[in-house]
Image 1 (cartoon, helix red, strand yellow):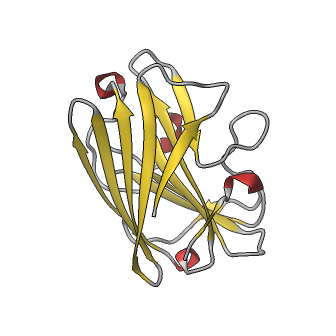
Image 2 (cartoon, one colour):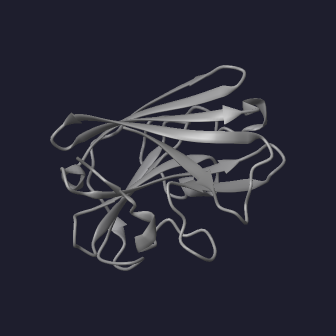
Length: 173
């Protein structure tokens, strides 16, 4: 399944023209995600390569994200994947409530780039990724100018908020 992300209307990008995410089911609780960022990628601010370790605050710069929750539930998980290979995973009891680290094996993160496409491949395994889960697929893009844009399959009204229930727009098959 391939989905288009759109920028939040209040935070357009000068350099990036499109972001798509391809989702591949690689096991009952495993997803492979390919984020394809198109545009003038030389103006994309990309964190330097680093050890593949859990790191907080990745969303403050270029970061690719996945939010997942079981159908009908309030609890959800947030996964952050940086092009540096750093990552984070959190569990929430409800909307921005009860945040704690989610136990997770280190996700696989690979990056490739051409003049007009920046690609981030991620493989992640977690019990919340079972069939029927609802997903929010998102990205924070920082440009060399310092401008940031916030991309999602669906945006809730108001300021960018990927945790909002309206963001969970994709049902995982």
